Length: 318
Image (cartoon, rainbow, N blue to C red; front, side):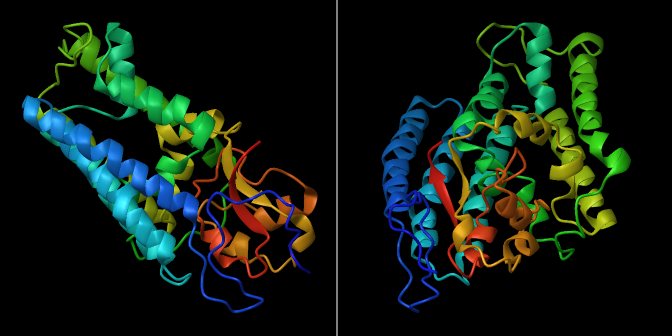
């Protein structure tokens, strides 16, 4: 069955025409994003470098420009069997930039850093980062950061453990609340017990020092890697423990950027469900006319790329 040309247009066009065997198309939308990213991120990085402050932020902006500029363009041009490699490269460079921002500027960008500033009534990089990436950003772009820029996921996706055997039930449903509770407890400990100076001056973050930030990053890495190995699931931490992921599960539900399904084109092969690292029952939801993401989709594009009929598209519309 041919796809109706009047159907919703894709933001990230399906690169392969399986029916005709034609040369993969290039998404012009991605090329526009690549060009805009270079024009925005790299000049900002240069300005910060000349100012001689927030070196880590400048490095992060440069990495963002590289990842979302030429590397994202590489993804747009790549063949279907190489796209996930290019996506991981975008993920790794973006994630590394965020990680270096934390280490060089000694800024805690995780949820405990956000809660700490909230308790102290202060505003700083951690506060702004969380507002943009975890609360406001997902309203428009969904959980794109989880699939394309997380500093933990760049390592987790290289672990030889597969994607798990399906979403776990029972106590695992409530585990994300544990992650949020631990973040709040850690924030309270630093702010109220250890007399943290993170919010000493309104509008500027005074870090807890290099080693406290390193320790926090190490704890996150240890928890995510151990959970992935124990459950044989690369994205186990994202599903069951990540406090940011738990919040984005709700803030990303009304997202404009999402995977859209053309049910009349679906052939019920379930390749999309089998490829999803977040265990979303995509084929079942397509069949029942239910929204595919519902807060769990990380926009990794595996389902879109695996669909043999082109029934799945990533669009930027309601």
